[in-house]
Image (cartoon, rainbow, N blue to C red; front, side):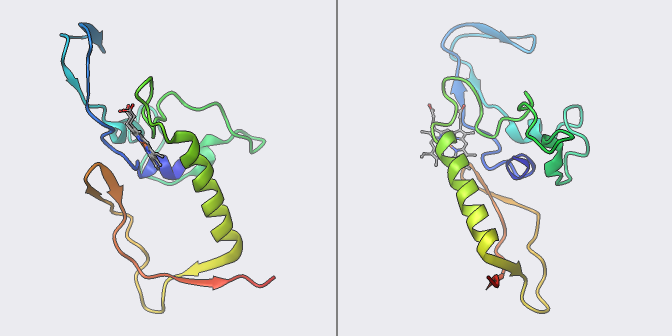
Length: 141
Ligand code: HEM
């Protein structure tokens, strides 16, 4: 959850259009207005998150280490009827992929190489990481 917050994969969601006149945050929107949600801004909002630029997975956990209810300001897959259709699939895939890799391998950077940059870049609608070199060593059983 923290990965998907701190480096929002689809930072500007997708553009949508109002199907009727409505109001949003005090603004009147006529029918046919293009609305483009900024999920990056939501996930980096200091009013919603303590030190939003920092990576703190524990912000989603309670004192017992269990998952807290999902904060309203956490929307990596956007929301509503046009929210991401792949959400359930993606969550399971990410969990399986990360746990499998981290159980099997120890990851390091090659000697003398820089750690992967945390500065992302955008390609089409997606945030991507810069290229980096990594060594994956199989863990001893
Ligand atoms: C980390 C991976 C992914 C993220 C963070 C993500 C996020 C998003 C976001 C923010 C939207 C825009 C929703 C909106 O307009 O309100 C979207 C739309 C969509 N996503 Fe994903 N997505 C991911 C992967 C996938 C995958 C794997 C699939 C398919 C298997 C998928 C299928 C779709 C579809 C079909 C839409 C359009 C929904 C519509 O307009 O009704 N996504 N996604």
